[in-house]
Amino acid sequence: MERYSDRSTDMRSGIRSGRTNVIRCVGVASGAVGLLIAVSSLCLAQGAVSPPGRLLASNCAQCHGTTDAAPGFDRLTGKSASKLLRKMHKYQSGAAGEGIMTHHAMGYTEQQLRDLVQWLSQQR
Ligand code: HEC
Image (cartoon, rainbow, N blue to C red; front, top):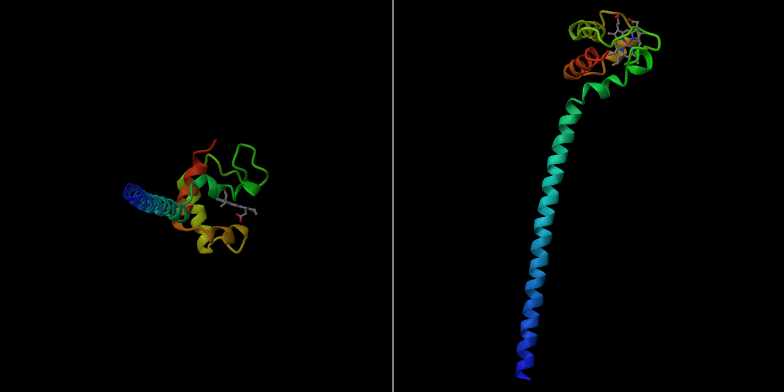
């Protein structure tokens, strides 16, 4: 009986230490998940500030195209980035009137415009 109770004590302490391990594991795992969320939200935050030029330029494709075969309006691809940026600033400031491009250009930050024209200028 004494032996049995000894064993049960051992088992109980085994279970107890097993639980502690599980709790420790959950603690470590949630710590790792927390870190992952922190890192990925940091990446998302950076992405929100300045998405790649290609993504931004997809907004221009319907009217200007982003390949050689522009669907109608002025072709933008392959033009110099500084020239495109100057035009976008002109639209953004309202100096080019109240047309479609003025309203379009107002939606971008300076960094987004720079990413955008950089990407467009590198396309052929
Ligand atoms: C709904 C159609 C439309 C969309 C979308 C559009 N544009 Fe335009 N864009 C025009 C029209 C129309 C003109 C010519 C008339 C004008 O100058 O206002 C023009 C002219 C331009 C010009 C001047 C081209 C030149 O050589 O004189 C630039 C630069 C330009 N767009 C850049 C962009 C960029 C960058 C985007 C995407 C962020 C974009 N446009 C999206 C319609 C559009």
